[in-house]
Every structure is written in C-alpha cells, then in structure tokens.
Amino acid sequence: MAQTPTLSSESAAPPGSGAIRFNGVRVGFTRQTGQHVRALEDFSLDIPAGQFVSIVGPSGCGKSTLLKVLSGLVEAEAGTALVDGHTAQDSRERIGFMFQRDTLLPWASVEDNIRIGADLSGQAPANMQRRIAELIAFLRLTGFEKSKPHELSGGMRQRVSLGRLLAYDPDILLMDEPFGALDSQTKAAMGQELLRIWAHHRRTVIFVTHDIEEAVTLSDRVVVLSPRPGRIRLDLSIDLPRPRSAAQLRKDARYIDYIDRIWSQIETVS
Figure 1 (cartoon, rainbow, N blue to C red):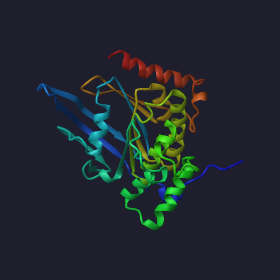
Figure 2 (cartoon, one colour):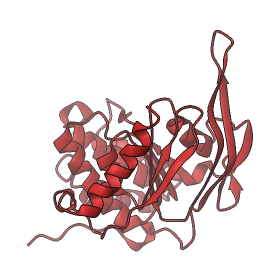
Figure 3 (tube, rainbow, N blue to C red):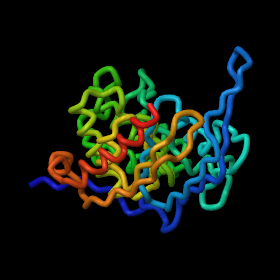
C-alpha cells in the first residue's frame, strides 16, 4: 500500500504560537449615501493556538470583516485584535489568507504558483525547491507540476492555493469560504484534504462558511454571529472524535444535535 506523503518536521508550528484574542472589537463603514453602517459590535473571542474555529451567521453579519481586522486589512474603530499579544499590524507576516476564488496566476504553472508563497516567506533558495516538491507530493499534485490553472479541476486549483499558503508557512490560516464555489462532492473532498493538512501542521484556523454541516465536520468550535452588527450568539465546542469522516458523522446523534443547535440560532434571527 502506498504511503501518504508527509512534510518535514520544520513545518510544524512552535508550541503556543498563533493564539488569537479579539477584545471589544467594533467596526463600521460609510456607504456612498453617507449612511454609517456598523459591521461588528463589541466582539470578543479567545482562540488558543492550533484550534480550528468556524464562523457562521447570516449574510452581512461581519464574518469576512472579522478576518480583515485580524489580518490588518481593516482597522477597528474600537477594541483590539491580537496574535500572541501583538497587534494585527505587527502580526501580518504570521497570517495567511485564502479566499473563495483561488487567485492563482493564470500564466504560471502549479510549481510556480506555489513558489510565490515560498518567495514571500523569505526561505533560503537551497531549501525552497525541496519544500515545493514536498508540498506538491503532500497535496497529491504529483504529475501536474508544469500544468497551468486552466488545465486543472476546481478542487486541484484549490489544492494549489493551499500549497501556496502552506509554502508561505504562516502561524494562522484565515479562510473566507474557500470551498464555496465548488460542487458538493468536491467541497467534501477538499474539507477532508484540509483536515489532513491541519492535523499535520496544527496551525490556528479561522474558517468562514455558510455551510453548517461543513463547519461542524471541520471544527473544534463553531461561533454563530447575529445579524449586523455582528455579535456572538453562540460559541459551541464540537466534541466529536478525530480523524473525522463526513459519512460516519452523519450517523452520530451528537453531530445532528450540533447542527440543529446552530440552525436554531440562525433561524431565530433570519
């Protein structure tokens, strides 16, 4: 039986790195009409290093804004967002962002798209090619090193995006509906791929999704936000054994209960 490729131990995060704290965060923006809209209000949340947390809630409740505050792309009106006690502005290099669209360079090969992350991380050239080769094998992209994005399936393109993110080697992964554009079968497969990667790296993950089943399947915790301005309505720990199989979870009464509890919070504010 063929063994699953692994990565070198240097990719493991140092113990305790990547702890996140949101403390009283308030964010607003002004529309072209001049109307001021509050996106987040008094948002406070602690996430230990290495935890996988999903954020769900109705459209427009500030889920994506939350990620932008932590990455330093949006400035909070009040409150703080900290990584290991340091501000978002001082922690940018430790954070990687993955969007719904893969944002791959269309003219670059799989290998070269992943190389972008390695270049940004400042890795020594002597180690870079070995790291890229490891990631290609780990993500099951062997044989497609020279392929361009238009030659790949949607799931493969997202694996290349993951490869670029992992090559950058951040302590924290911010993922804004990264599989939302995929069909259900590919989406489930990518979820399992992400869990495999997370189990190896144990990076801190904040995963934004509208898919409640996806959130419960992947996460240690699911945080439900209220309609705008976003506040926490539910912070639910997911006590299900790992590794997880979506097919097996559907037979677990606890899995069904978690989904029902989350939906009850969302439906009462829809």
